[in-house]
Image (cartoon, rainbow, N blue to C red; front, side, top):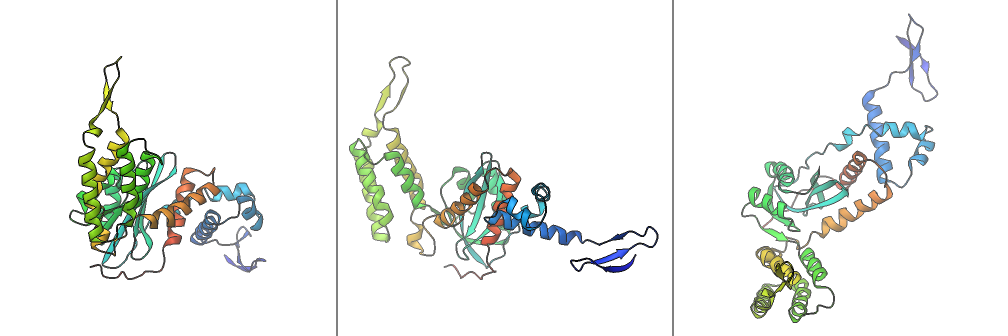
Length: 317
């Protein structure tokens, strides 16, 4: 092979002495990087496939074929941060049968690790959090209280403060109670839930717990009332929703006020819910109709774009 001039794009051409064939050498790594970059621009941008294909002068079908090989985009590298981190943990649905689990560092304000799984459960959280536990010292945890996640945290991070998301407790309780509860117990509990957002000191924490205890004692017998089906003779608790809220608060109460003890701990998962999940949902809506692998590639590109330069985390105390 000898050099044989340049193409119009100033690429070196080579000629074979035996067959007299002229060709250009292509680096496979460069081609893959260009395709990955082009796909990231499509997934995170506003241009359609037709607009991008017209801009680079190839057919839309050829561009779709290029984007079918996206294995490189799905590799997730664990973020290296400082000595101590505060984790916000949450899962979000990206398709009917696919869930994205996110581990977000509250101090550096960026996603640390993530994984795709069929459902949010104990085993999927353990598999993801084990990677984080091996390389980082976790100072505190914040979550919405998903059952599988709680079990995983109790196994991997025993003794570490686990803050329950106050926004999730308030939102779920108000949804079950409705705006106008029909019972006295429901009306009083709704007022108590609304005051939960304003608890910002140790004195208010003790006061809120005392009011909740008094409410529980006052309506204990009322919440034991049952209804009976005369045909099947089956019974059930009449005020199931109010009982469910009481159970939710009782189970969450030991983990509800860590943010009062240490102001470095956030009391909600809003950094992930609003900063990542809502924006990702908008991207998925914009690209509705893409395959499951392309959805995972979209989520991966988006989360990598949320990663900033390596920041040193401040010491947690």
